[in-house]
Length: 288
Image 1: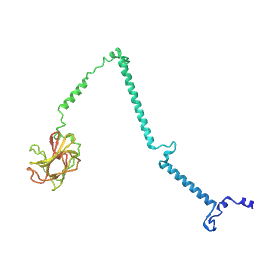
Image 2: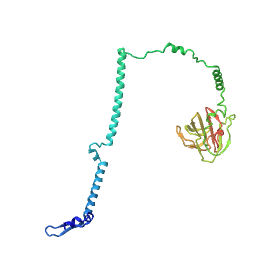
Image 3: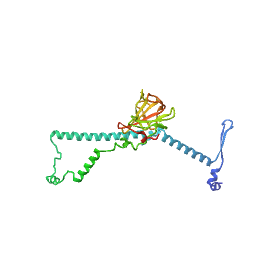
Image 4: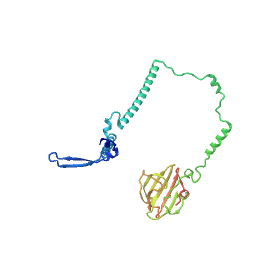
């Protein structure tokens, strides 16, 4: 029998079934029974061990319990240590600079000055005596030509002195028909544009509102200050939607077209552009 038991393979012994029975000691009544195999017990114990290991690792890694493990510090502590080390380094540099300052001050007070008072050799000065700083004849002629061009500069003559804004992209304040064009001789410093009633008036460029109010002659007027000393004026509005000091973007509504003021006879917009204090023709830059 002993020889037969020795010949039984391990896999077969792990698959043998056993029954775990719990009996009442007094009456031998069966209370609980469980069929088990050695292989099943081994798998159960392994699964429980793996689960407990995973649970223990999670508790250590993701809970404050890790702080109690020697050599495993908190991230906030590491950040604090780095900040303290940087402060200590700064303090060390500051102390070193102060020590050098005190040492230099002591040397000055005691008369122990070791400043470099060496002067260039006389030969070096003689070598520079042949250098002249007078302009050449060609340079003098070029300077005169440039001075003459600046003296009679025509940069402000083209388009009533508005060449500096030729690269700007102007947004149309309102789409409509121009009924009265720019005419400086008649004292008409802008254009009159007829459009639909209650049409929004939009800013021609990015700018800041410098005036928004009522005048007897022009009705509701709003005035914008733009970059490069450029100014736009919008007159005869029925209402103004912006206040003084407001910053507006190009194309942003600033007023509503109207027929206000004694000089207005119909619903329209009187639009003016001023550059460096000079009125310019808006039709040269804006497509209505």
